[in-house]
Length: 85
Picture 1: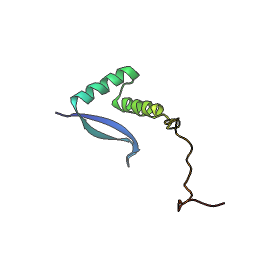
Picture 2: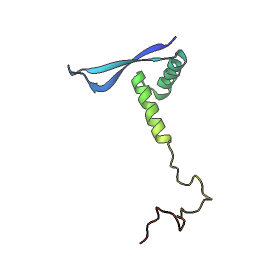
Picture 3: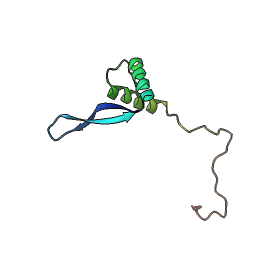
Picture 4: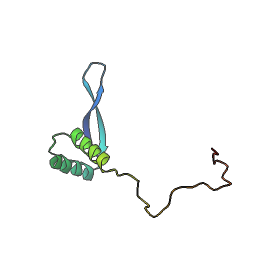
């Protein structure tokens, strides 16, 4: 059975109050979010999810150097997309 978690959004409703949305997650996911709340020292699921977004953004590494043995890209002479200077 899925758990319902209600979190405030950054969008403002027409009345000026922060709007809320409810999402359904499995009990296992809710337990994991509870652990994230403890690890990140945050109080809300909203803060836990934002913590995960920030952590993910920081963990993305550059693809540069992925294949260090490969040489530079060079077009073939008969390549129709080759530009002549």
